[in-house]
Length: 337
Image (cartoon, rainbow, N blue to C red; front, side, top):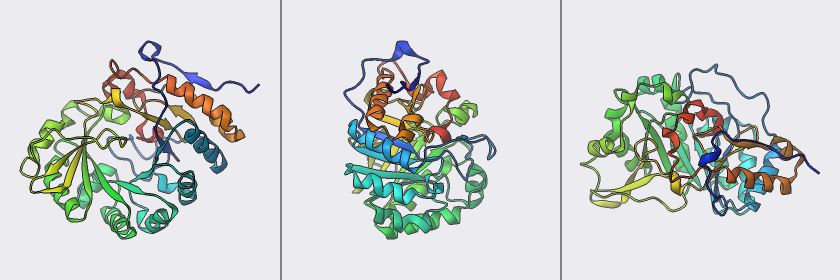
């Protein structure tokens, strides 16, 4: 008999009866990142995991996720393009026939890899873009070069992804004055811009409270560009609510409100950290350690571990995600954001 994977349960009273099955997974191929954004990690020397899943272990894990009911896969990190065989792993996921295959990147390496990723079967791409001002971008990311990121975005446009989005974490007195410029810039290029409230997860919890720019304030700054509507989510594609442009319903802006308006009750996500830990929620370190099972290639046992992790999913009616105290102890970079 195989030993049971280790489950971490810090908040057992909040766990409700599990949902039928997970449908969406965020797979963190690596905890490494070549940037150190001020809301994500304290420095470039904050330490990395000693051991991560190898390629065969990832294949076993992904097979198990699909068998467990997952139909939508997003590849994340750290920075997933730092993984030397990210293209091959994307092709493997695509070969399993998932409904949706996406990737989130900081785009520093995207110019060289965009075309190969598209050819491997990657459908959608999201790029982190916190400023269009080079000096400001360098400061927020602690050393990032805006020109490399913009070159990556242009390569992605040329590669013909089905959808291209940008993510901007909005920080008061840092980049909050750029919302109209970022929106217009994205629309001109056929990109969907998204604006994210800073969350009190990990390093974000150490930022001054006044750093938060709430969704209502963001909408106010974009009122001249957007229709006065509540916005709606894309079914099965995450928590963002999208609002259409005035005069052109083809254009829209997304808002992710993890601080002022949590969305835990509708969450169907599971996360897999690069060490194989199955994580049911971004805002807690609860999880099921499954590296050994993945390294043995035991898909059946992994399906069981996935079910155990899913049973740890907090009750979204009472649990309020990234506003919970436990969120401050989570590494956004390590869990995959």
